[in-house]
Length: 123
Image 1 (cartoon, rainbow, N blue to C red):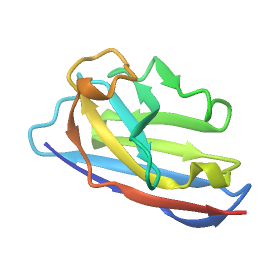
Image 2 (cartoon, rainbow, N blue to C red; image 1 turned 120 degrees about the vertical axis):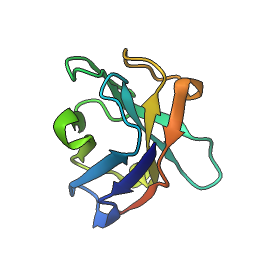
Image 3 (cartoon, rainbow, N blue to C red; image 1 turned 180 degrees about the vertical axis):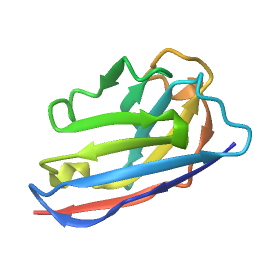
């Protein structure tokens, strides 16, 4: 499975971005998908996850109310709509495919990872 993330960029605080991640190869829509991020000098952290049917989603407290995750299984794509961005959101954002169908924030349960897309938010 290969994951290609896109949509990152340089924006100002308060702006919005939508990240996309397309899966290819031996994909399955039966797995939960997730977004993680890693800021310079920090560990990779959970951002959001969505179940394989898309009916259940979880968010990190730091992004609740600002970010929305969604998926289109017909297109093998997961999205992350990010609104009201803050400088603290600056990081490389990674999409990932979980081993399981239920959403999880546990990084170690994700098997496949994309290459990441840079999001930079200026104040």
